[in-house]
Length: 359
Image: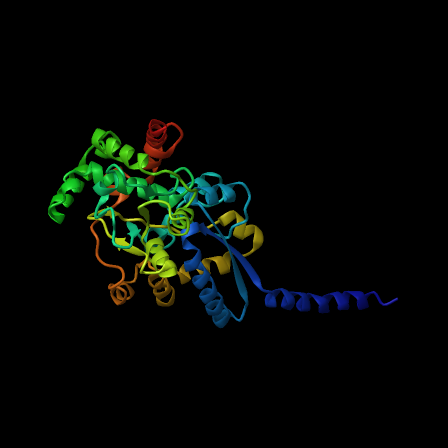
């Protein structure tokens, strides 16, 4: 009996097996928030082409979309995301706290791991019959607004904070100049306690706002559908890209975009889910994906989908459809996401108080 024959056969099989694995398609799961589905459909395809050209290896990127907070919870509960791209940093922090993402994730990529920015604006019906020009117009009697639920969606939390920051940063309500707003924000930033946390006028304003919202969808896309398809409401408070996409999809003859005097700088982040990519041996491809988001090709796709790119040259190229707007940051007015989340969105916090008051 030749004992070397099976050993030789096994030895021959090893490189063949390795070659088979080397040529196998890599599969990634990108879990994001509902308003970004069109963006990532294009990004995922462009990345697959780029990765194949550079490495010779095929990669396919599956998508999962929903309310940002719900998506983060799904990952914590076992959804095997390789990449998480929610609407806000707190949702990644919740996955980090569950032990799935390593500490320091925000420092791994430029701009605190936010490859693009956005903001909150308004979409109104053609002719703007209710005369909505700024935040204060939305709280008037007889105006019906639509926005998603801050307990389930990330965009909805940006909406809440944009409205609160507008109201809390008087003279923002009667904004006469950018200088006046900047002085107000500077005072908030330098204060030992942030006025947005205990500003009675801001709470009164946002309470009035949510009294004018008849339904709270779970995510921004749901609110857009309710407004555009179901014809509910006079104004949709939404992501900048959602307003542009709704106008594009349903017709410029039906809707108009309104930019308020001031809004919040939204910075949707991205991160690799470390535990999952290590278990699935997809780290190299996942890292290539998040780095691809900062390339000129991806930044151009970002702008074409009505998000604000980080690349100055790309931003300048698309300045006509993404006009300048006065923006405050969550750090300036609220002291960052951890403070804002605790103060406004945890169980029993300000949003729950406001919504109970509505009932």
